[in-house]
Image 1 (cartoon, each protein chain N blue to C red):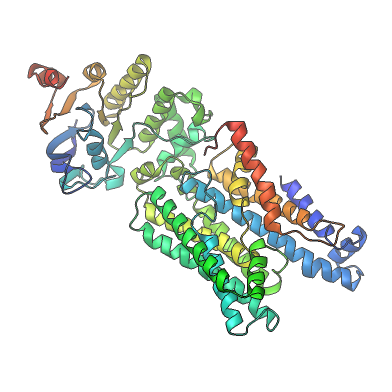
Image 2 (cartoon, rainbow over the protein chains, first blue to last red; image 1 turned 90 degrees about the horizontal axis):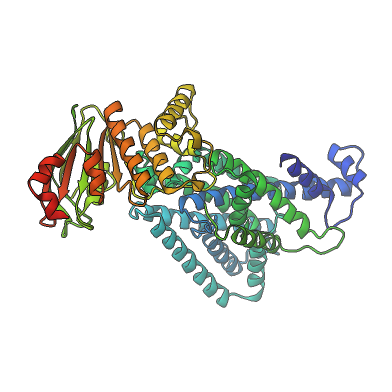
Length: 330
Length: 232
């Protein structure tokens, strides 16, 4: 699997919507007399995009594992607690608001991009804080899951309202964000996203011991003296750092968070989170980079929305798992 | 044999307004097996969960041995312990050593030896590498008991440990509980509807009657007083 990941990472650098000779890309990578334009395409566009896809795949998959274990629900995903909808609501507010304050995409593009990411993250964080506050009162994870879905639905409804009253350019900006893209994460934004994702991944590793116990139920965890609210908050924090950051910088990317943990379970046949967390991170990175390569439609001038490609890759996996096992289990 | 559990005027239930069972007073000693009997819905599971600290008592107090922390006091085995797919029996049992493993949940050398020894004592050493989900109900109940055993608590509570088992498995679980009490000085309290199993393996009975009275005593005394006959 690590070898496959390295191959896919290389392929993502060598293939793209602009055809470049492999020798030129190789020279650019090692800084040997590469053409300026090739150097710029490889280092300013393809490399950050590849790193972003790598981080997004790892982040969403590791989130998915944690959500599925916490809720003992094979259909739980990083966005099940309304992170995506919260992020979407933040972006919708910003995009509509920015047209009011004349911070249009055309006037100050960097401010618009940064604002989109910041508002998305704040929206996701607000939803997560709401869920965490509720988790102090709700004992059952299932009640919390339903609450999360309700908050997500409420956020989606508000987004619908904002869309209804928005003008065409703002609506277009918002729709483009919902399609997902790895192409806009460069420079400082990539550094911020990397720092947030690495923090989330480290926190997820720290959650491994509790996740293994949670696989056997909340009652068992309580009997072992584990504070459920503390563990849940730690898992939510990791999820916000990971999925919130991916949503903020790349848009909402669905199905990877649900499908990849099942792929990792099929491939590694070990539900112990000491195996599942790294296995999902690795599998997620491979799948996301493959989705990125496909979305570039190498050799053509067109680019597909990465969100759509990820969904088309994730859905067959879920269907396969259902038909193979007759049921999706944890 | 020493006192490890004191239940003082405890009421159990899910609502202050409607306690399931009130004024429970009982003691339990180490090295003994106690059967908790009573009709469906009387509050046996609720009492076990209350003793385990999974539910707060509505009234009264539950005291355990001096110097024992609340969470180190008892292990609880539910009637249908949840199992994880692709999670080995060894890993399942090892989760019971939560307090002793490192931050990643990994055992040191001594811990590994303890787990292996418990697997042996629970008679599931040959299943150690099997996927927990592939075991029969009887086998998995043994795994759950082994998991409770590695928690290293003076008291083990079991909620209907033989509910879905055939006669051979019921008997083997009964013998295992007996052995744990005798050889490892554990206090065992388990709820059951199986009178013959309880008669064979229990030192004491706690009987919760429909009149909301808790009768305690040896099986022979309970039988002699006609409490068992009134119940069944």
